[in-house]
Length: 123
Image (cartoon, rainbow, N blue to C red):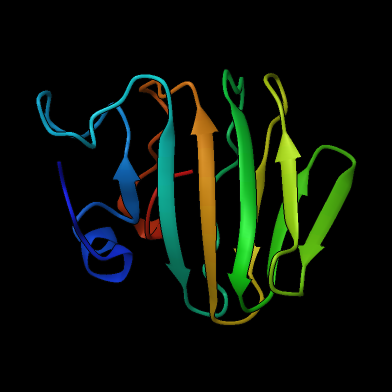
């Protein structure tokens, strides 16, 4: 069992609370799913697009204004609870238009998507 606080624990691993990247034996280790509590300052953005996506993702806006860029479509999440889902093979990027908190769920949890540290996290 593990009990924590998303605001506190997220700071330890670029927002990621659960996934393949947690130590084996930790209840938060999973190859099936990844969960991120993303806190973003205005202007935070992913440094480069995720290409060759192998996962399905759900991104839910908790607070703020957050834009997800998908091929041929820009999705603005502006009201608490707005969400977007995209599947395997769909490239993406994102940008926080205001200070934002988003919850991301991706499945399965697979390595290979981390970007250099300048973007404030992964995914």
